[in-house]
Amino acid sequence: MTPNDPTAQGLATMASAGFEFGGDPDQVAHDVRAMWEQLGRPAGAFEAAARAVAVLPQRPEVPIADQARRRAVERAIGINPVEVELAAALSARELLERMAGTVTC
Image (cartoon, rainbow, N blue to C red; front, side):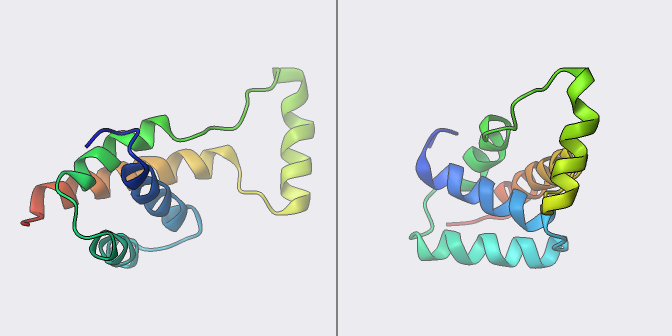
């Protein structure tokens, strides 16, 4: 399975979003594993999902002069800062790599 596979993308997105919205590693792992099981326990899915974290869509870059305004707008409408998204993506990748090393099919 490749990182571009819809299953890998879905697991990566689920893990990243779980951390972004404050989930703890045990809860995120539980949710991701449940999704994986519902998808038929595809082999190589966690490894591909860990790599897929790097290719998930990112916010477009903005010039430095516009970043303060962007942060203010995002804060006003309840969007997490980009730093939270980055930390969530790193946590998701670490969790998925760990899950890939422990799964037996």
